[in-house]
Length: 401
Image (cartoon, rainbow, N blue to C red; front, side, top):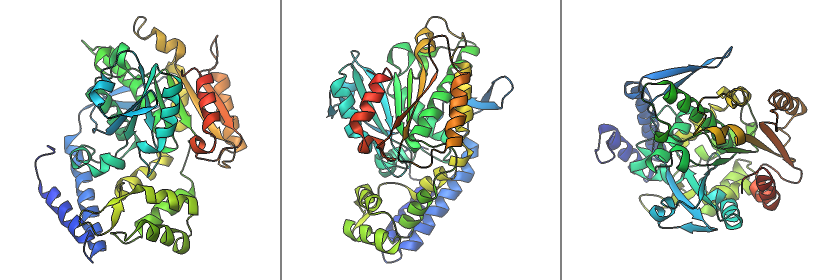
């Protein structure tokens, strides 16, 4: 859909936003929900024909030969500073790009400090911070949010990343990002992105006239920061349900923090963080969220469907396949999945760690294991906040420098 063309769906969304700014806020939310559901039903008519790539003795994966995804808001961090001139940052050939992916209900800004520290200490690296679909400026910018249509699956989210990189010409053997770093939900997408770029590269090579210069190459380093496989923790559902129940517009940030802590029982630190995800409402009568709750709920429902461990196994199996001796030789030798676990996160059970260790032992190459695991003993889920220096040391030790 063209961002400049106002459809009946746009008009209904506008009506919903008007009602949100009035006393009839719940009616406005209901209209927006209805439009989102209708868009989801129509998206099937716009999907492109899929190709299938099969791993031996495993499920088949569908993949489009021409990636169909949305465009994401982004900002560059170079030399420890946010760069306002995006064209200048993107045109630099003396740095390698690292993509940063935030967690659920957050935005790229959450990883600014980490990206600033890494690029300051390693001037050969540039950081590209993305606002994922339904989050941050991708959600609040109508011309961007209109490109991220349903279904809101992990595959769609990863295709958004690929499509955005293509739009920035971060493709081919020279300009593709060398690494992707993701926290929590962003870590899941980092793995999904690595998995899908491998499949897209495989499919492009197997098709007539395909060229790897048109799409991003698989990252050399995939950093997954405290992303626990399986269903999301119950507390995540509690937070989303709590923020969904708050009437819009929100009078003040203090009001939101009070409602979440005293009425909804949300942890004070999480409630305080939620106030950073507010923006002025369109009617200037308070605040609304910077994220789309419908998208967040849809994505949350996908957590249990992601075959996290299966994708690690798949990426490990294909890691050594000889599918392009020249342009992909470096990726074959250096590509690695790095999993960072928060020592204070009880979701990392002994059974889960043993399963990961089993995968690790089965993927050992002649040089080193394809899967590396690290533990930050004193960090909680927010590893980049609780132990920033320890995390940076682990990342640099893992070869990203």
